[in-house]
Length: 320
View (cartoon, one colour):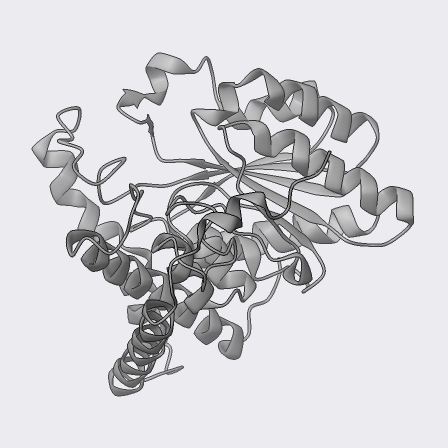
């Protein structure tokens, strides 16, 4: 089992706190009319991007999903650039081209972007992994996707190719129990993790609300991929605390289900563990949160000062 140092635990905690406060700030900006597109909150699922991205190197590749922005936060992307994309202005990584829909990428950090349609991530991740193997590097690709997306045909095509060619890719399925409003039991036959057997690769189902469990499973999968042993499928069982989108009435959830979610919070649970184990005091964790919020506020200020793009922006980056 991968040992986790106190310093790493604090880093994971800070990463999740940043995701939570980013989410809260983005929701406020949405309510103020400063975010120009819809928003899919990642509140409750912070442990998966935090623990799933932390084992990566700077030059490893990342394909992220649409729920929240924890993935790119954990990979070290500029917060101001991320807010700029939400505001659709020139501070964003797309220079305003995304019209508020976050498809930001950062090649220097290995962030490949988000697919325009659910399921397109699989082919891109497989291609990036093939590139790393062809070039003889030891780079690894981590691809995040939801339980609903796992039912796209591209999943089979890509996972089969990655397994057959022993490509260095880690597939992380965030199973929060719903594809929008459809319960996974009504859309998916059997357990997603069991598909790994059919492709001849390891598969593991973990508690996606425990960042240490996510971190350990991903470390093992990344080490395996980097050693040339091929892909791994990780199914992280989790819960989202908000609706699929802002404004979602969530009529598909019972009141009892909603009420029990707070006890599963990966951030408060890790905070309690850090204090109980003497790794940090409540005061230190409080100071950390204040510092993170200050960093986020400054990023919002920086992004807000940028102008909107002119019409000439649509002609940039075109290829024929």
